[in-house]
Length: 181
Image (cartoon, helix red, strand yellow):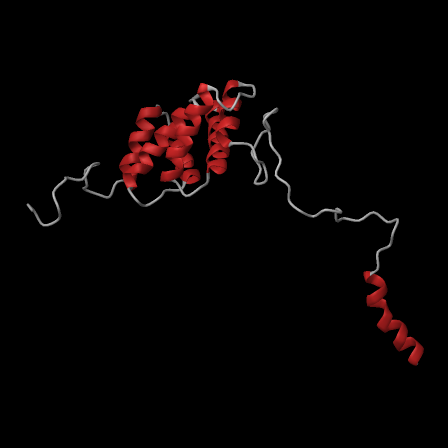
């Protein structure tokens, strides 16, 4: 009986041993390594992709990789910087969602430049002031409005009206609350 008990007690230890020649599901180095997509343009930027979102997005729009100092990349970088201040998502997610929105619009014959989408939606989000918006949610509302037949400017105007608190003008008056100083 003792030998059976000893054998059962050893099973967990033996199961934990390395089996040498058997393939393992784990890699030798389990560290997450950032990769970059500067020489090719993958479909999406992954969380571990070290490629600058502006360079990737501008390259996707151009149809080929662009240099980091290209005018298109600088313009996209500025647009993403502004958008990052208005939205909860990071630049990588904004870039990915912009490509997704661009593809969806293209499928219904209503193409827009990535920069026009980012700048337009960023302007709508600025209506909220210090409260950031969700870029993905705004992209979906924009797409739905465009799919219903609205052009770019009309879709943005409808989104802006939706974002504004009821009865408030876009720009608040410069007077302090309570009247004159």
